[in-house]
Figure 1: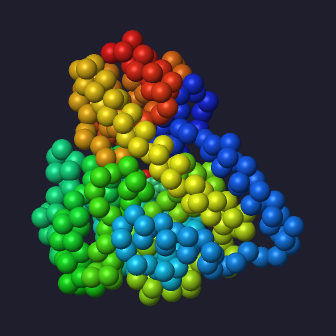
Figure 2: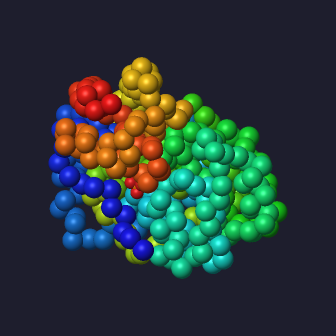
Amino acid sequence: MSAYGAPQVPAEAVLNTNENPYPPSPELQAQITQAISQIVGTLNRYPDRDAVILRSALASYINERSQTNFGSENIWAANGSNEIIQSLFLACGSGVALGFTPSYSMHALISNVAGTTWINGERNSNFTFNSEIAVEQVEKLKPTLTFITTPNNPTGDAVPLAEIETLARAVAMHGGLLIVDEAYAEFSPEESAVSLIQAFPHIVVIRTMSKAFAFAGARVGYLVADLHIVNAMMLVRLPYHLSAITQAAAKVALDFRTELLGNVSQLVAARQELVKALNDLGLTTVPSAANFILFTGFKATSPQLWAALLEKGVLIRDVGLSSYLRVTVGNEAENKVFLEALTELL
Ligand SMILES: *Cc1c(COP(=O)(O)O)cnc(C)c1O
């Protein structure tokens, strides 16, 4: 096996891990600093191990966006959604896990590390999700955990809610969980699968503050689910896993959601411009509902073009798909540097 290893190398434009290019505003920085300074005198004490204030705030945020009625008992928060994924495997990972690849590589890696057999399911040849094939695979394999990523990483396509519901029905027939990884939900026009949880309590929706909330460095991810799932998370979590500093900072970032989601709209507009620019260069782009674009149509191999871009100060991602590369939508300056470098190299 090999460890997760997106290169962390200095570059003029860092567009390889789907981070949000906008740092916290001076107001947000000041409020986070103030919130931390208010608790710094109590760091001799363990944090609230149930993170109730943060989980309530996350429930309000989800309810506001999806017209749902969740409470803190339907939310579990952890150090990034990767910890959420790991906890799901710890709690429910006996048997087989299925995901439809290419998708987020950490699903398979965490599965294997946790000792759960991982199976790569299929998609259409244009990478879109095929619910018919997915249902067939679920019926055949009866996985304990079935993963669906929407918008999918690294391809960017969003799965329509009706297709998630179709898959949920198939999963319900044999009693597994359907894990919907919505790390990029805020960038997508598609409705969130949280609206299906009441009817399908075996659906678990995973979200993160790393992308839309521009909070990757703070490490905050969460799930939305039936309270029985949350109870299972409490069994497998390490006591006091989420630091008091993290909880306080995340609560402030949620209070700034209007400002932060404004930046998301800006990134969606920038994505559309970047798609057009790539198409104007004669490249083919995979339709994206996220903050990144998978593209193809260049003559060099993916590793060659990736290295040549890095030499020009632009770090993007070779996701291991032959003749494709993935670029994160950056700020105006970064997108310009990327397009200029690419134009010179094509
Ligand atoms: C970026 C990403 C995550 C986020 O991981 P964090 O641990 O929350 O930073 C989760 N799932 C997918 C599909 C991602 O692309």
